[in-house]
Image (cartoon, rainbow, N blue to C red; front, side, top):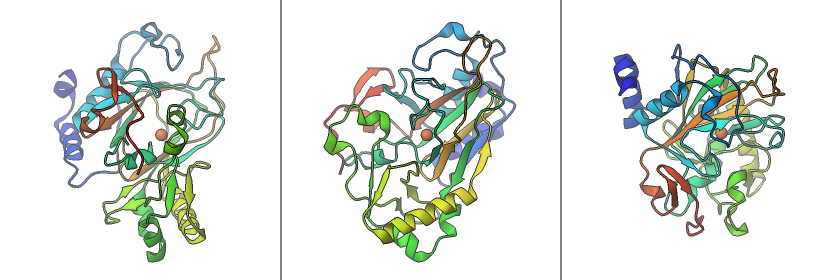
Length: 302
Ligand SMILES: [Fe+2]
């Protein structure tokens, strides 16, 4: 309610138009937001540490924006609370996840394989990212509107990408809680629907998409080159928030070496909230707490 009172009408209108999705934007950047003034340290990503900063401005902003576009939620192995902390750590530095650092988390649709969970889509419709603490030597987050990339591709390539010629692996952290046969999709298309408003399920970091043949592989490579060409980088710092439409906009994070504060804690602290248009698809998952779910083994990948 505080956010609704404080936000200019044009921002609220923009977010509700995104929710309606008649003419969705690929991403929305909001600048000059209020910040948590006293951030005392950077906590461990998975440990709820309210004493790390005074107040909850960043969390409230991320939830407020997410809730105006969709329904915020979390999956327990990605974050035990609705607001996920993306903080680099030594143990996870080589991971292809939001907690990694040494490896480039190349362009992807968040949880792309989960668009093909039986008749249900467990991939978020969008994600909110905002800064809590800033690493001046930190990485850029990059975004790419797949529609712009697809417009530069040949009809043959688009045709390949629209056919069920690809297997997509479930994200790294999901694999730990799934048996082998559910760790990748059967053959699925990477784009569905008209290329002006496509549903995209592509992941370009290593070993995540297995094309069925060489022609499909070449279309996948051309798509990757086109995505890189149309992308741009944004520094996610306190006071800035970005919403990424996960249906047709890819995002990436550069590789980086985390800078540390005088206590040896990383300076980079980004928060993420994922949203779905509603949580009906999640009704058969274990609800660990309100809006936080744990996958169960029943949902079968088609
Ligand atoms: Fe991501």
